[in-house]
Length: 118
Image (cartoon, rainbow, N blue to C red; front, side):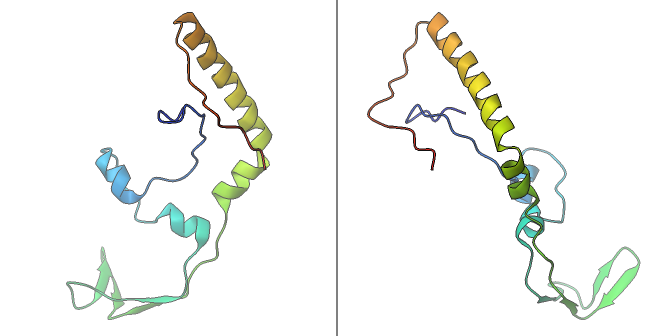
């Protein structure tokens, strides 16, 4: 996307939270992608408004000691492994945007900003 305030192209990669997915009218997953990417620490799960934890016909008890999960870095690794393809696609789309802007005789003020590929 092009940042409207700076005119600079920006690549945003990530997962939508379940709250944001719900706002878009989709069915949210009860497993947060953040948990998959970064893992979870061991913790205790307690019921909020019930006496026992249950799902469908399965009773889990008063508390559940969750052992935690390892981080998988699935999103980070995917981006890093395909960064050259992502940059090539960016160049292609930015060239297309530039052609469209030139055809409409619209100029983007780039200001004094510079690109830093560190």
